[in-house]
Image 1: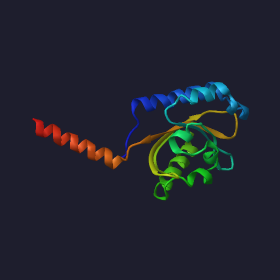
Image 2: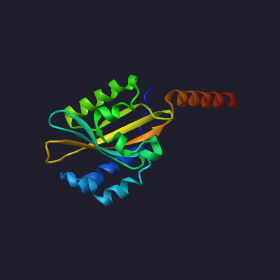
Image 3: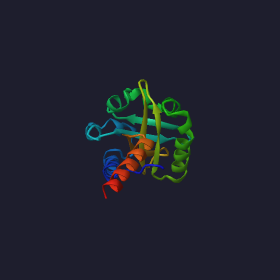
Image 4: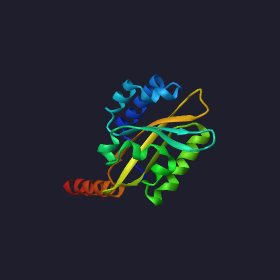
Length: 170
């Protein structure tokens, strides 16, 4: 069972995309815009900008400072070529992530992914969503957010227990 985004998470992703269209037209220097970074700091997840070069190389162009709080990693530990940040994705979940990225890259579409990250002190379930931001550059750009989420198996067990309690109370 793959969890879905909550309405508030969908709203956050849409707000990030709106901000990106305003602050990140196509100039690489716009990644440094202090207003964009200040707004991204308010997002209750890890905001990021993902780029796909014309040569087919994926890279995280920018990762918010919240990566320290959420993942226990410095933004610089995640930012950069795909090889750098894919090392934190659990091996069993990498193919699903790379497939989602390949599909989004070929279509210039939104992508979503649920999987596990292996962090220095723990394993964490995350949900990621990113929306394509049209640009005049040859490089394709997505703006997105990663959210920590509960283990889907634990969620399902809790849902079943709640349902059993409801049935017993009838």
